[in-house]
Length: 122
Image (cartoon, rainbow, N blue to C red; front, side, top):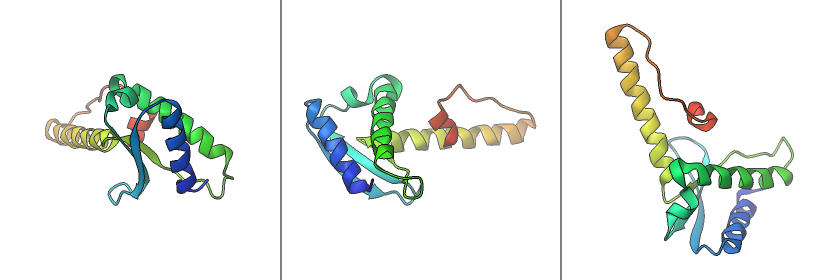
């Protein structure tokens, strides 16, 4: 599935959910992964508590995309609502940098809070 087809799938899902939103696809130069950006007037409906709804929506979209692709052409992408994912990526990176400095200064190991698989990947 190419990203244009994935974009159309996202638009169809949002239409079924009766959510007005604009969908765009862009390549993020910082993480080198395409983002499917959803601009919604009411983003809380799509994001949910601590991003749980967004993770579920992203999972569904990725499963639909996998059905239309073979392993050789499979593309990775991130579904983002009103910049929530980009903000969360930056927060995780900043927290990791702070903890790295703390570990170096105190010369001891530090722990981060429990994270989802996606957050640990970042």
